[in-house]
Image (tube, rainbow over all chains, first blue to last red):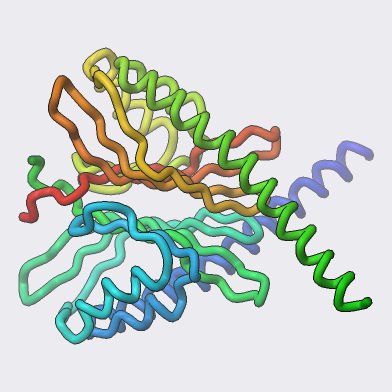
Length: 148
Length: 148
């Protein structure tokens, strides 16, 4: 009987974890897609609005990690109005989470006309004290770039 | 008086957070350096031993995100004994953490002879139920590669 109760307790806690992780996944992937769709139409503010003050950032054009929302805003403001992506394919988005932090990873193909640009992406979201999930780490890189 | 107590409470909690984050930082950066030093001497097992079963992985030579320790082991086994890095410089390692998850980001220069190879790196560590920190996400990319 004790074993049965233990087994049930474990099953309930696994199920609670899965449900929790599933609902965080849906939320985080939704946030990312909304921001990405604004980005694809020349508006970087979607990402800026959901990034934390202490966000850190990598992309393939930047010499070193950028630290902080001010620096990221400066960078993104240069891109404002200049990007137009016709359609995108977010491949295998996956969220791994604990209560207050979640890692979203995916491959992305951004199509400009018929040309597809392939990306690797890692976003880390944190649930802040005001109960908002915010990006604290962004890492964009090219899938299989030419190696120097 | 109430405000003083509140201010003190906030200061204590910030200090507790900082201490906690500081001690996690020291631990995580130490784990990463130990694994990296083994990698630099041709031994990928340092990373494999501290990676979780559900680890996900990006590098610039891989077409799509790899999912799971088995796939990562297969990839790393091909590199076993083939890598020799003479020295490395881990630049500005930074850890952002909550209780059970921590994000480590840094720039890296790996020197083979006089040639320095520049990397961006994001590692996400999770504190598992057995009280071990393990990598659940690795993202290596080249700093400013030639763009296709």
